[in-house]
Image (cartoon, rainbow over all chains, first blue to last red; front, side, top):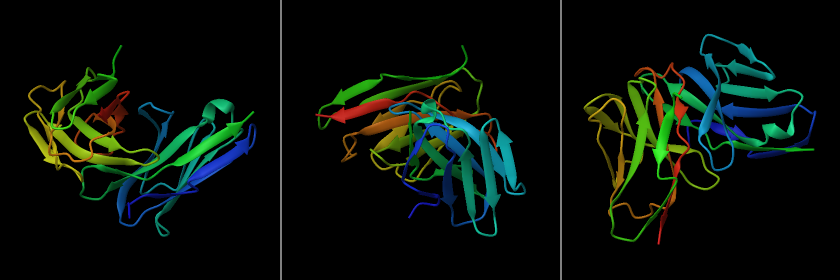
Length: 111
Length: 114
């Protein structure tokens, strides 16, 4: 299975609610990154959290990292219809010089 | 505008043909990457290049080839040896070889085999 596995695979919520997505991985990492992809488009980088960090914020985004559990979560607060997209975690595995992407979470925000 | 461009946006190929997908960046990035994305799936790494005139195989390199003759350009050739090439192909670049840096993605090329 892939290094990064995301949960849930799909999430549908009402506008204004918070959305939480989780990512689990298997091996030691240097950092973990979250990306967003609108349908049929390229990916856009959202946030990077290093292995020695536990939490990071960027606007309405909050990312946590628990290296003991090998997991990360992405929280989007006060969701908007424009947040509808797929969200991917990507892990920078120690010594690998490349990112490994998860399968993604498809987020739908209903107006 | 600085960025990364891919062409064409849509590409149709007959079985047995080689096709080349273009990727150009004007971000002065050293590293460039090619990924394949199948419907509802994540990205899988095909090839990557940390510096001009050097590149490494990713996880699914069979049936693909690349070149890196210029810093700005990293074309991908899908050969007839690739048995199931229909997919969405994404090119990306980053500042340096270390993956501490975020990757910037192009808009993608959707390849369909007829």
